[in-house]
Length: 335
Image (cartoon, rainbow, N blue to C red; front, side):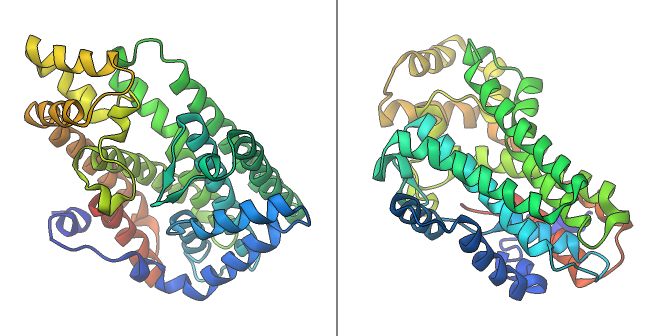
């Protein structure tokens, strides 16, 4: 049995703080670097930046960038700036997503669009992107710039791909994978690949592949959480994707298995502008009984195994162990 799968089948997996242990001190420097990069004299930028840094989350992507830079124990100091830029780009995507979705909460706190305005949210997302890119330009590494520019393009294409879906319930599994690769896996893969260029350039390819597979597993696990997690744990309403008429892998897998009455319940939900909680709970139960959640979990586990396989070329070290633990953490997280 794979080490990762064994850990996923135990009640507890490695906590994120244990994964971050090999780079803990450098991760604290990343927070300071993020503050430096977004520093500005304009009051509204100061206010929004302070709020965003307060809700920045678990710093998972910069952790991966720092770990990959240390894969052969030769991390370069510029990896701090890279990791800060990666997290700022991630924050930019969250700010834009919340504005597009008209979300009011992010990790239990008000979103930028609800606390300020949608206009401020859109412009602030752009500001975070540009400041991150400016910081990378000053590094003067065209290879890293190309990786990050490709990621920025993929993130935008992913958003347009989602907005352009004409009939949500006709969204195929292949289209879903293309979407999450663009919206989620591209940034995680880019963080790992560019991190490798800051200390372990010979491992650029395997670490890029690791990040891609990890990113796919990450998003599938996140989409499963929308069907299974409690609002008090996630900080956002359960069933939010269904509430916003988003089709993810559990529903895609369940649809062909539904009886006509069950399918009608799904159709009613997607035809209702603001579906009630009981209707959302009903569809979640339908999807679960049809095996949609179990199918999604199996596909996520396969991506996790592929990520583990990509790490086999790395030398044994605390960094490799942390990257392996990150796979189990992604698959077993509760929020």
